[in-house]
Amino acid sequence: MSDTIRTGGCQCGAIRFRLEGEPFDSSVCHCRMCQKAFGAYYAPLVATGEAKLTWTRGELKYFQSSNHVRRGFCGDCGTPMTYEAADGIAISAGSFDDPTLLPPVVQFGVEGKLPFVDRLSELPARHTMDDIDTAPFLADIVSYQHPDHDTEIWPPESGPPENQPPENKR
Image 1: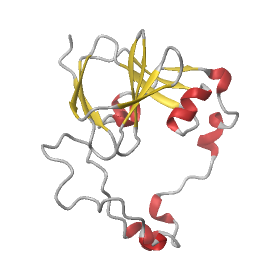
Image 2: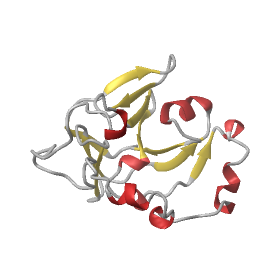
Image 3: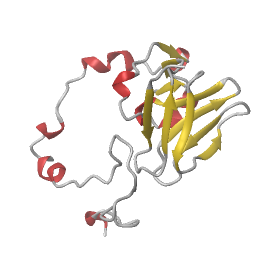
Image 4: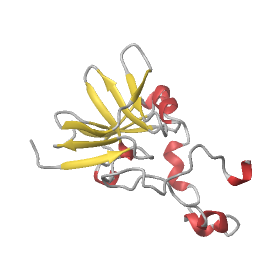
């Protein structure tokens, strides 16, 4: 087994994992079931293959999305984490601490690919702070997202207020 170790987790930090060894592959799935599970135009997934997957913090919640597949997610923040079938487990690519190391090598479910996906790179592109009207709002945001590395204790004492609606919704 390779000495490669990759870590990751959900957005809030309640779920963390460690993958030891090389994953089988990285892919993008365009099927409608994956679109719904990820709330996105497609699902980027990393098949663990023979690599050793260890859940180092928390426990996943599951949704049985078909007679053959269940989907694991964080019960606290809702981050999609796994696609699990008889042939193995795939982890959501975006949940890895450094997803740039896992570029997709294949696309699945292309019959469900939305017609505009291949043209996304043609859209105008802006940096987050380019919109002067939203810059003050964006500059004031305090992120409660877990950092992209393992932590001993999470959330920190100064974490998010419990279930508080945004100021403008009170």
